[in-house]
Image 1 (spheres, rainbow, N blue to C red):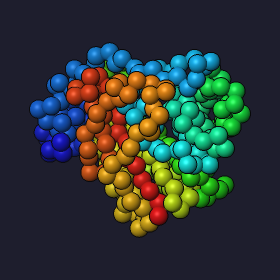
Image 2: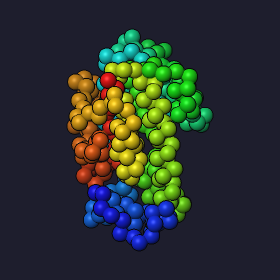
Image 3: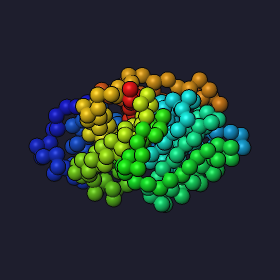
Image 4: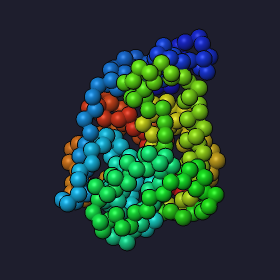
Length: 281
């Protein structure tokens, strides 16, 4: 990855189907045709069930892995910043301690309703009573409070190339300029998240994007700005995960400069899902 753009066009002029393929060919080179084919194929989600009395939730196993990378067992105050539709919220809530509280935030009212239904259907009343659902612009949360949470999951809005490829109207409208716009939004969100994180806390940043600008590029900016942060080169899966899902369903990943990337051409259809584990000292 990281080869030079093959098209002679400036990046900002790339748009539509041809521009999409030019851009991702420049990143993934000879791998792109197989990756593109895998993105177009059906993705079989994994099954997560918090308890016998609750409905199971089905989500991409790459997303499941990203949520599991945030260690919440010893945390008291947890934030899921962009929580809808709620799959990762269910994973985090299932694993948090009996005294922990989780804030699940979603700015969109329509998506927040989906989040509410997921929490109601897929978690026990005992757990639901310790979850607060809010509707704030996550990039502005840090204006009201700082250093509040022990653990934060930021699953940021992104290019979501798998959805773009599977919808011709979105593919026709694609442009590299949108990648840059989303990266600006993601930077505002992660900057807010870092201010909200307590010293000694852990933040997982995740996207379902393929573009480096939205993944390693965001973390690189964070590394350059803050001297009190470190990026973890590894993570561990909770030992009791088999109570909630089948561990052999969890995908592998490829290491990147600042994180981990689950890509569907090599992980049985899972992903794409990038995540980075960040510690604030």
